Image 1 (cartoon, one colour):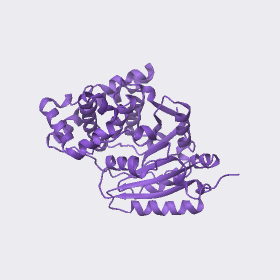
Image 2 (cartoon, one colour):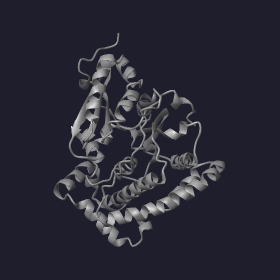
Image 3 (cartoon, rainbow, N blue to C red):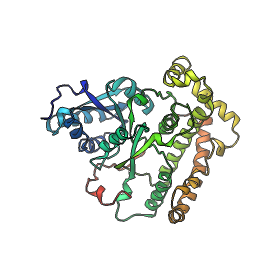
Length: 387
């Protein structure tokens, strides 16, 4: 007999956080794909439950009300509704970093063993994705984070343009490196997440910061790639940037994020006394509270020492070429033109990032006008194999 949970939040095993900023067009399709996941049945059959919290941050559209409508519908029609609770946590301040901190340290229930972090504009099209991510952590005690394989929507197109081809080759180069953490979707052990705190002025490229701390156990030792594991048969889809302008803006955002991660991880936090690094979440929270401008000051000092924009952080220009080594020789040849072009785009993006940082601005998050994935059907997303 399947146990009934009158209040799923009393016995949660998993807490799912969905971060949304003005995603009225995307949130409904995203939640529909979420509630098709086998995770809910798998947990329910084991007498376990989960919670789903949509954290809307600084929204000026109907994102929150649309999410509430979906949760209400799922409570009535979902086959395993007794095993989950869904709600919206609306916060006024815009920014994913603040939303992440509040979900981890305030909104998610303390009993949860695993926390899922996901964006509101993706689709999870393989029904076993979330369950396989949980199982990967259950079966791999050395891993702290389980990830899936991100797929651009253009991967499933039958007819591809040259822009599509270029974008997909870049993805192959990116995914060739080990221990990749994509902020769009990952599962993290709750005790690990609660040992982290994201500085308030950290840009939205928080995945690099989280990865650095997770793979070093809060800078206790050198990087251990095995702290991040790739779950089998697990994928999500996101809408790719294909226009040159959108690609350049995205590259600029990443350069800003990587610059600040370099300053924090490689320069500043490693110099802390051991007891402060062991309690890094408390240390960073205290810094934000007592000295709100500490990170901005750190960036300003770095820019005073950095004369050239291509030296914002080590490996800025050549990292795409370096990642080619993770591909087989044939793939290296195929992807080389795209990698070279990407290096040039990164160089231009670094100039733009340098100017933005010099102006004192670090919160750069352009909202692109994209078509959305609402019209994509699950059948379309299964046309191509994973490899």
